[in-house]
Length: 300
Image (cartoon, rainbow, N blue to C red; front, top):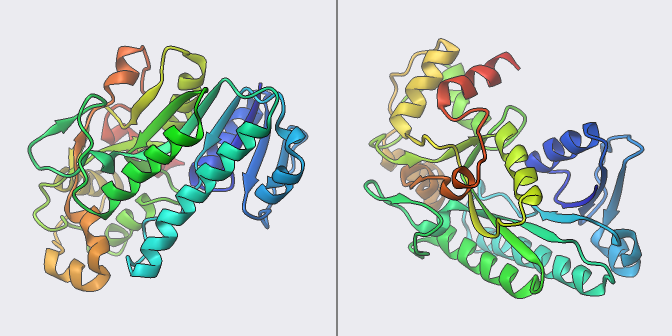
């Protein structure tokens, strides 16, 4: 199989690339610029958007395009930062759409990265793919706009909008930052600790992407979250248990807001999201519950 991964040098993209190379597939990793540390492998090539625009033939014959590109939400949400977050997502969707339109033989499926923020936040409600979109804050506005752009850009091709929760891995993403206070001996709940956290292990999101490609009946929103979400309090206590560190030092909401501003919303508010589509179509999680997921990361 031949796969195009936009954002292939990112956190999930690197894991997905290595997974598919080990399975004997051919990968084209696409980014705004070539990465400094390239992985040398005969099945892997790196291209920029500019080079693809001038030579789209390199993408002919691809079986799937996976778009994981987008600036991190983990930055101060200044007006400039917000613009960068939104623009980076829309620009890559537009570029991917232009590439598709230039191909004689289009991929059979597009996997477009999205996020569970599209459901809004709640301490009580539970969401699945049938739940309505709710714009209540900046993240939900970003994701709604992002998905609408994907619907417009990828017409005529099966589209899966992968609504991702917090992806747990050691190399990057949110988990190293969430674990750090525990490593320093100051771990504890954030705010009330009652806010929900919908998470997924890095291994499972890679497997779910492949599952969506191989199951043509899957399209539209697909929640990339483990079947057992936890509260912030439960998550923190489990880190303490698995890593043998104390869970005792709460971080008051007002201090977090003072430190990081509006960005604190993604830590103080959350949503309980279930992967109904994946489960109903037969996907089985390697790490459906939190403790084994964290234990695997600890021993990695």
